[in-house]
Image (tube, rainbow, N blue to C red; front, side):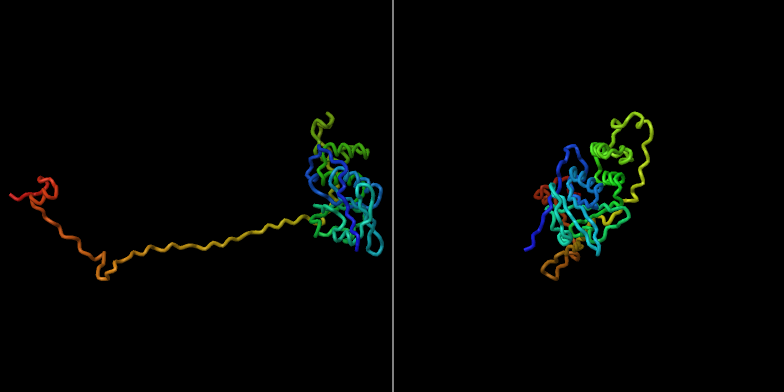
Length: 256
């Protein structure tokens, strides 16, 4: 019987102040097995629901995969990876970091069957990595500040658009001048596939109801036609008859 390893979603510390949309989603983050990329991946996993995998490309179109379970790195076979047998909670999307100039092969791209959307960052340089991770996760000001301080980079370097940075978080001089131009880091962002939303149009066929004209029923006697009957003859009443009929006498013409 083959043993199936389950990788926990790494959520070591999620601040209550973080309200980004990604806090309710699980992201598969795949980083090359080098110190800088792994460090960024692990720092992301401490703030957002993350399935963190490090990979190393091998000869003969193969790869070595290891997943972080919150305490240690554990091996993931390519078979378990392709079948999605390494997680308890499946990811909503995937973000793959490539080493500079080395494209990841198809075998390390998560299948669409268990991961509907996937993107990649085509550089492992720390500054653009932090910038694009921050864009993807919609970093709060607290996160931008933390990464800026811990990686010893200015806020402008990793967050050139000043995303989620309020005026009171800026120095006076920064508020009096226009913000720095965004770094041209979108060249490193590639969409492998977007989530597919299928909207089914429901066609309801309605049957037109034609109201029939009412049919006038004729008397049972075929010889009697209600439209051919003669009008009843007028009755001339005398004075005596008027009294019996309770009509005023003066209304009845009397011959002299």
